[in-house]
Amino acid sequence: MNNNYISMSWLLGLILAVITPLGHADNSKDFGQYVVHYNALSTALLAPQVAREYHITRSKNRGMVNITVLRKVLGSPGQPVHAVTRVSAMNLTGQGRKIRMREVREGNAIYYIGEFRVTNEETLKFDVRVRPQGSQDHLQVEFSQDFYTQ
Image (cartoon, rainbow, N blue to C red; front, side, top):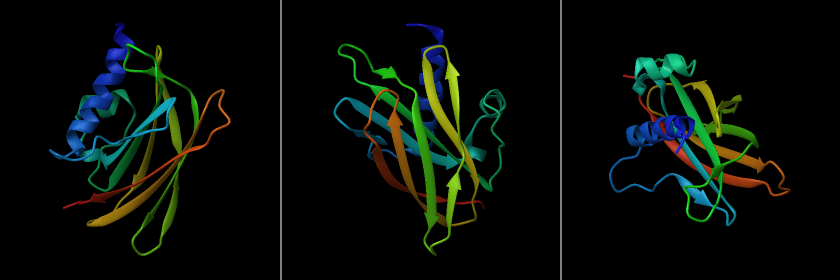
């Protein structure tokens, strides 16, 4: 296994470990040929060196969303694929925001990160839409995340 894939797996694993409580769903959705992994968290939870390496602003008032699209490949954890990725979020009072996503590539690893402001006790409902490269299919994932800034 090459070091670039290990680095991407390490970051995704770190983020999932930070935000996924024991017994909670694994934050992925299977679409047959593809699996979309997703999560959102406060950037204050990131280790300083991880935030620096990925140019993420650490703050209790900032959140981030991380999306990875994998093509299923028999006998492997999947092959990361480039995808057009659009993410929006809405809080419980109906205030919406589009989240600008940026692609991060490390060798063969590909994932998408977006940052946004959050307020204390804010619940955001995320709408994630991806279209894997070479596919006409638009894959949609919806999930919610609570943010606490105090």
